[in-house]
Image (spheres, rainbow, N blue to C red):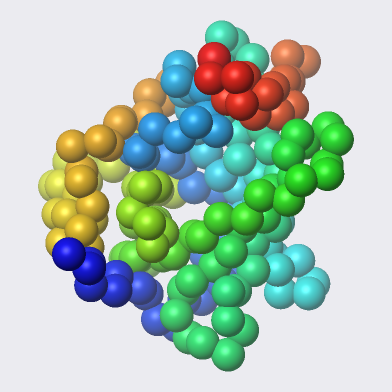
Length: 184
């Protein structure tokens, strides 16, 4: 059965979308450590209207991170369908890995968002704070369900308060990518 095309946000204000977002929940990804906590993404608008992406997660007290670039899949479209490109492995950037990043929902104040992609294998609930009201969380889950997602696969992300500082001496740039390739 062919699933209907997902509804995507139109007219996303990229400028307002920039900044830090905390991952409240997501479908587990082979690109992230299973025990990752305090996972977050920071977006910065580049002068060429692409977006610098910094994804961070903490595992075993160490900060793992990877950087990439996001850009509109179709510059002429007003739909919030972005492509995100990372290079793997990060310390030897040779293989570009490109994924879809579709903003399925964002509230009027740009405080929380639902992100997916056409295969429906990936789903993220993001928030400007590292916690989200339970009613809103459930509304976002329902939206995902309405778009054809199997929300039973969603995993809540653990956050500590206060969130960790940005840099740490224990950075493990991209190590989780290597582990993910070997299924660790």
